[in-house]
Image 1 (cartoon, rainbow, N blue to C red):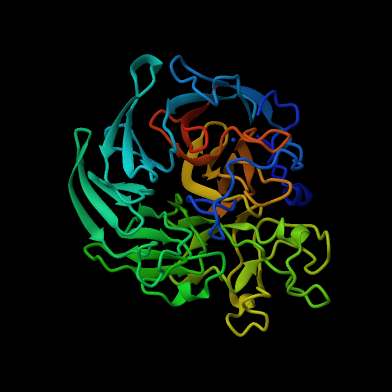
Image 2: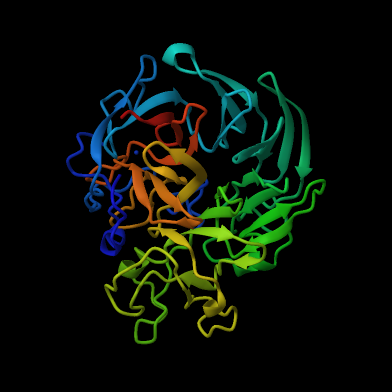
Length: 454
């Protein structure tokens, strides 16, 4: 396992692939860019890319017969800690979030086609059998089970099904009228329509609702509130605000201690917030590393500050090339929306527990016990669409120690080549019944099996 990235390494975006790779396809997370536009599928070939994290080795991606369509029609390698293997387990175009069903099949959401697909593991290592579990849905994304009840987060509602014998029946809407581009007050303008749902220990549903745009303060006053994590108590269909100021908390998962965590796509084009001639200016060198993406533990009523406050990674704020830190960050006023601090007192916000590098675009979040690594959070990192050098896609691991989250480490990297081109972009990583991780990749159209071999 690679050592935690240094402050300077994080600043330079060292989650990129090494130039030694033999081959080569954000903050966009849900089909639209963080500022509302559509990000390119590949980073410009002329973009500089920093070196790979240390401590990782090149690992060939194993491709079983019948799964070798592009991008696996040429040999691919990734970067992993020594002793880990990566193989293509299934081909699922535009695969997004995943959840394991009680019968041991893997469900994968396909927002673009409005479907949830079901993968049944094959015998003796054979590729899984694929079938459509549900169709005709509106941008389905997050999924969660409570016993035999399957909840699916559509862009405008939460739908429940009865799951039995590999079939989903009894379709019903349990939380209606969630905001999406069809909402009358939004008039088609909504950048973060995809939603996530998880079931809490209290049997409540917790739903991520993204912001309308990069900066849209009106979200904080909307009904239902946007840029928030909503809680729907058992037996209710009316959401209440659990946490706010969460720009796009697509990643939602409960930690071993029962606390809810979110991985957040933060804002773009943050202006320089410190006094002086550059105050309020959008400086590319500053924007590249500010603000970091958030990994936060949520408590009832917590405010992550967006769009009025931003997590502050600089140890010497206001100093160019300040050393950076990734954990326990204070918050700084946003020069565009909260220059005088009247909108929100950023100094009163609890410190932010952990972060990803700016523009990483973390998506799916899960907790897992990994062989040789222990307990921790795993996240699919989609990679940047608007940063130079490009922030690379990867599967990240955050060790969980005594209720605290340690620094980000790379579990699977190497999806991005030295010229900035990519062959894949991980979305989510979930632990399977066999102890391996199953990683969805919407760029490569694949589900990978990631396992410890020694």
